Image 1 (tube, one colour):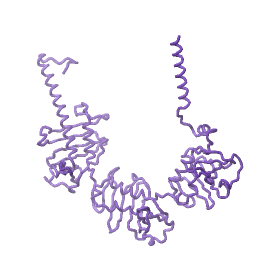
Image 2 (cartoon, one colour):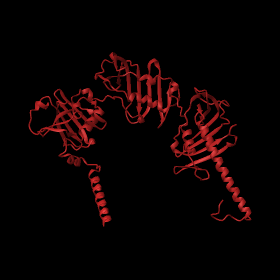
Image 3 (cartoon, rainbow, N blue to C red):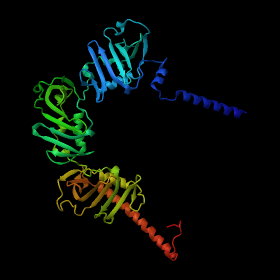
Length: 498
């Protein structure tokens, strides 16, 4: 009986714990449920979905600022200037679930006492369905950490967190978009720059992650370097809005700019940036310069570091990842190794294929371990230590009798052949150790590079694993043949050890 009572008490305790968990479990509430849940705990001021806000009107004693959503983003209506994306996001974030910290007055009050009289800031929010919400933002309370607020149609005065409304009194400039030349680098087709001293750079996109330099020389260009140049422009930020009237460009060094950068896109008009004279001012330790977009009147002051990357040595932009393949799309690798004095028995050709996210030998047997994946990654992403020559010459780099040849085939039918020639001058580290290097190239392109020993090392690993497999297969075949002979040539029964 005592045991039964103990079990019953344990069951009751378990049910109580489950009930307590059910009461406090996290639940995703709809805006309406959230509003209802807050009632009686905190006074909800606004509850709405951020994506539904399409217009914000801020009326102040000195005038009205209107931020409105359009098909191409948010704009300051009337001014026809781009609205600050960070300011729009701030409004959405601060107001979409705003609750009152306290009810100050629950009825008519002395408006001037709370900054809700003639000096108040009136805010009107318009949503996608045409509905609106309005409120007056007043002064900070004596503590300075909260602001007074009154919702239109409500006589009560509340306090809300300072960050919810303090920004509505900022200057018009704070509502303007400071990143005036932003774009998505994936949409860029071409980049050209006319630089000081008559230097000119020009690049053309040839693939998702591939570029060619057209000027001042012609060669395959490094995608990461080009994205760096584009990022310099896209990240430009206005420190000052100098003027919205470009009538006197010479005053700002923009009639004959120091540099002109033009970016062409697949789905929009080109963007041309003009870089003018230094302003004579600084933003911290950074010198400021005048800049503007060719087709827009506004002149900005921005940090004058834009040209540092553009004026780099031309060779900086040369492609070093010269295989131009994606290791994640490879379907097969055909690897040939000629052997060297240290591993003369590793010669031969090995084929591995990718099927159902696994690598297989050409016999259909899965390859154990990660060696094929390591080789695919190494050779597809092979990065040159140095660029050597625009084209290979007969016999100079050992490509006629290469040390290793790796043919990559991807699932889209593209193929690339990497050949590793003779040894190149090694590098010596600070401790005096030499790092082995080789000449290499992609057969499909003329350029010659120097690479480290990483590709060759993994090729050797693959050849060793294949040799072990071949040796094991040969031993199994020999054992099976011996059993056959001992049985007088009879076939090995199914299930018998081989």
